Length: 226
Ligand SMILES: [Zn+2]
Image: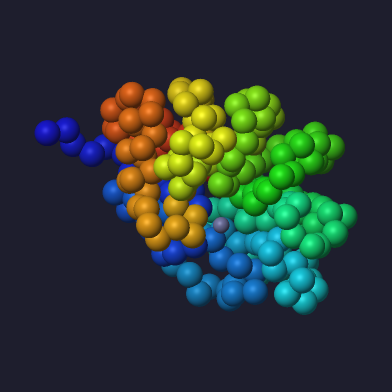
């Protein structure tokens, strides 16, 4: 029997965050649900594009103050760009840029929701000169885009799409053996993070433990944890 050395890392989940020897999960909190000091779990917080019409204006200075001392805050987001919703792209970009500022100011990685806006995200990465790692969660684009992203410090994160061979995500992950990527459960109740890991280990024909080690090392490095 092999012993477990590294925890699973679920980089983005809408369910309970975890911090332990077996699993670390970053729970996504929507900005409208955020209450100071109410969490004792690793979390990220941000304004989701789907809520851009629902939430009233945010006072960004107050928001920054409310989160800057949260020791469990591991990342900013999810926020991002979504071309499938009826909110103007200019407005979406304005909100997204606020999240980039927070991420840079607090030195926390940024978790990104991206639907049909990969080229815009890449452009903004360049124009904003952001230094912190970005993570495009639910990544579902081709290998060229994935490689461009990784080169610029934007790490793709994969989840349930990996169980559908017809998705771009499935084809892309096959080519990403040994590259930087994360895995996630997002809002899926059907899969646990270990199922996603097992799927990738199988696709890459590597041992589960090797995959766990690779992702954990990436996680520690990019999230500056020691
Ligand atoms: Zn999500």
